[in-house]
Image (tube, rainbow over all chains, first blue to last red; front, side):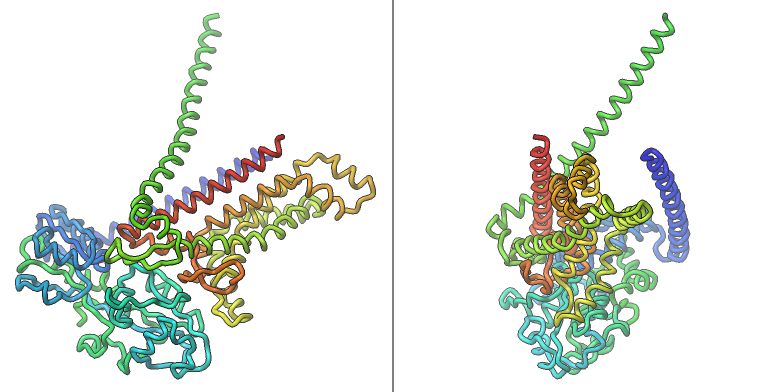
Length: 298
Length: 298
């Protein structure tokens, strides 16, 4: 009986393995043809780039830079791109010292960091929208109301003009760049002003899960990148300003930031090729556009 | 004569070859275990050194990934969350599972028995993410409707974990009951005991060690479960004791899965330390099983 069962098990296992293999082959086949298309369309722009590019800095920019590096190296076999994290400040100081060619940052250059030789390449715009469950009857929140809700001072929607209902606060994980900007710009948290978030805040670790959670939890509030807004959640105005690309660009909507690649002087050679690749329509639309507003669309 | 000798030689050579293969595979798994333990321990060391036991075993959780080693990294909230969720999982799951085991072993007609057996096998094979999804879309809203909370928390996690530990506890309890000598049951029934008296006074007490091992293994399943729990426990950074059923909180596994992606430096090391605590939980459970089964042999 057991042997029979085992035999059956092996049969099923083999079947599954064969199936997986088939799927894997299929996927590999698709991937190949994709990258081939990419090469032909890109060839005119960046063929023949060779040399080494190093970059370090913001962990928010890191996934974009890593993706760009691997795609860039696929197209330019003679080029080598090395990407490291470390944080925006590290990236900026290392590019100034000449340790790396490109410093990635998720914030603007501070005045004391600007020595005149740093060249700014804005690669994406990130807009953080305050989103609530569609059932919440509140359309605008002030700075103080947002602070009150996320720190736990305000716990019921009736306190900010909505219907009676216990507020569920949804936040991002500690390493999230979206959380970084929200904490800094909306809650004004800094080393000098440490603010305790409400303990009942639920952590989500991606924009997608944030959207799912806010959409499915009545009376919930969270924050999300502009690109993830859809009709399952409701973006509220902040200080009376609707989050749009225009209001973010002219600065009237404050919860936004550019992602940067800084170089020491105008880039040359492989560095130039790499930054041009990051700025290309194809990369901006396909990769940057997944999480942020492509710089080409501004 | 020669031929026989050669045949024996062949046999011996084959025997030795098989032995080598078996010894290699056995030592590989032992090696893997030791490497995992050594690796997790080594990666935890920076956290233990910089944060210290006092810092790690506190309620203060405020990672600052941007500027380590600043920030506080207390693990008590997820440790207590794991214990609370597991407590309810076993409280819900164990009686249900043991009841099922008794029914399968004692009362179920052949046809129903195999239906239940297949059902439990399928339950054991359902990927945890699907059970978690079910919990998120059915259980959490249901809990939300009957309580004044958002539904996430220890209760939801406990129910989901009960479902997941059910197959483990049931099948091992069935084995324990089946291993009892048939005379026990026959004698009890012959003495005029009812079915229920036989089960509760003779069979379950006799099989109690096996059932206890089943429950301990069920605890192990509940402690280590990740995906399903993360989806329903709320991932909030506040302590929830076992009696605080509807307070969103975190477990060790949900914290690890939330933070493993983007943590760096000390923060990352703390994530490994959380893994180390889980490993210690597992070892304690294995030790408990050894003690129970050793007692049984005596």
